[in-house]
Image 1: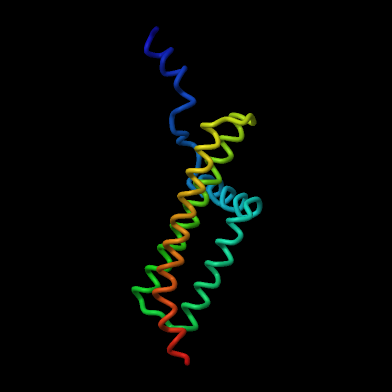
Image 2: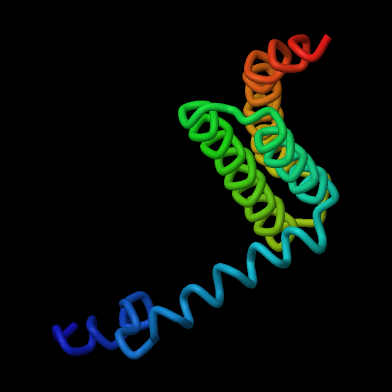
Length: 135
């Protein structure tokens, strides 16, 4: 097989240099929007994130505490996006009761759960003392 033939065969895997960076951002925003409109848990994460931001403003948390809260919010939402992608691809590949498909979905959901629990515990460490100072 000639080099030119190999290049044409693999061309679909190459980066499309004509695609604008704005189109890439648009696709990413479409993915985030799709997740927030179709995934119940993403909506819950969004509400919790808003509550944390409001609580942070009300309790006037420190700069470091803001950084920690924002990193944790970003990590939970990003992990939920990855979980949604894994579920979508798994559903696309098979609709059968498949051990490996179930494992992939369960493990990715478990990762989100672990990060959410850790984030909640850190949130309690940050906010509970400030809440008790009110009394």
